[in-house]
Length: 317
View (cartoon, rainbow, N blue to C red):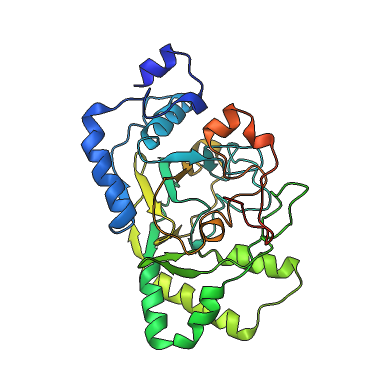
């Protein structure tokens, strides 16, 4: 597949599941997608080929592979589709977001339907990755602290971390529910840093009750997380509505060729699940500035047009 697309001189954004055909894996991809969509929401893939390939070829391989899972969306103000999770030279422009630093990454979700991470090089001290089921947190809170549910379903504003367009607000402008239910499906959106950043920007400090609620979510998620090794050639996929992901801290590495380096692709998938308000629950946190565009949008120049929005500021679908 790599040879075919290189021979055709396709650029990265032109590569898709049609021209990057992997026919012997078709059934396997269907099982993988089903597990991510309606199974445990998480998949761990081993033995992806990372040795003896250039970075450019690895981008094509990873992009082509992921095109069979979903459709990639842009992740930053440069309309970048593949992010390097590293504190090294490949670290992308991403506003005030902190990705790739050695410190612990708390459990959180990203701004797309699915998150995919490919390990190219792990830090020498091999920090474990972590995932946690957000539905577990909801069930415990519903049982033990039901008075918290109203705040959690109302949600919080999210900061846009300096990557919004000039005509857009610096925060979402509307509250995004942490937990929402539609047609029997529970969706969770949780990134404490982005919510707290919005409150600081708006000069509206969280109440002690709100802080206690978020503390409880963090405690539940970390106490019941699944921890696993993430080595070169491993890929993880997470359903961002049902699974939070993070990792332990690792020591700072000075040498560039020893620094931890992952590739990350955000993916959307049509008819992925039901949403109480798709404009806010699905698109409310990741569609601003140059984030959230698909390859065809960029190829056709649609990413340069102003997005239509509803009166409340959410994307007009």
